[in-house]
Image 1 (cartoon, helix red, strand yellow):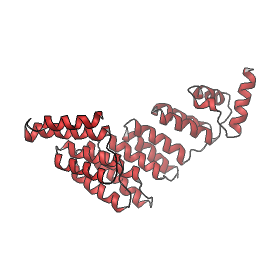
Image 2: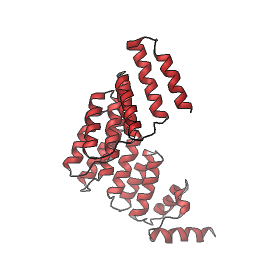
Image 3: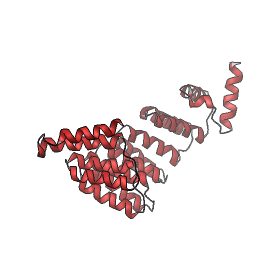
Image 4: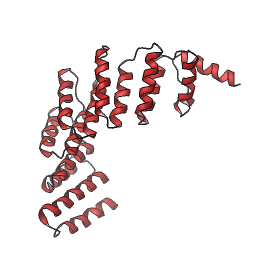
Amino acid sequence: SKYVCVCATIWRLRDGILPTCCLQPQMSRKLQSLVTARITPSVTVFNMCLTEASRNGDALQCEQWFRRMVWSGSAPDVISYTSLISSFARAGDPDRAERWFKKMQLNGVQPNVITLNSMLDACAKRGRLGPAEWWFHFMEDSNLEPNQVSFCALLNACAKAQNPKRAQVWFDKMLGYRIAADIVAYNAFIAACAGQANVAKAEELLTEARATCLSPDLVTYNTLLHAWARSATQQEGQSMFPGKMHIFALHVCF
């Protein structure tokens, strides 16, 4: 029966269909046995392995599958490279992500919006606002249309860099692209303000979000509490902070 199962797996892999069981942790072992047996899975199958490893946040495994894909003679496509770049973005390793992006270009594979969003995300996680902005302009120069994910990544970079002025610039540019801001974008903008203890602007953004029928979440209120805490320490003393904290604690709980 074990022989029959293996044959069925190989049959379906040759047809470009990945069995449901291969989406589980044993996927790596099954495909490793195919590679060892010199049975070459299709590009689609390798891409599913890369995507799964990337989603699991395992950049090293993703990189190993990519190398096995190349070794097997399969040509990586934009999905292959994007999954690999995304895995290092999730790991907060923009340097490794950029190295693979350059290899992608050298091999003549054109990036798409998802690829460049991954580069933006990699920079945002490290608070590298300048490089993130460079990648955004690269996206525009490549005639690729930025989306909400692109702008949210930039706003997250502004938040990490504690730069509310640049956050305002990118927030306005997002609206200029006629992309509606969601609560994730507002949270990132509020976080940028919180980093500089700009309570007035943070509260203004909360009011604006509610006016557009967005529902603030736990991240919103926690970020506002952070803004008030910094403001209380730097400017206002401890006089008004406890009262505001009590009011927003009620919002968070209920």
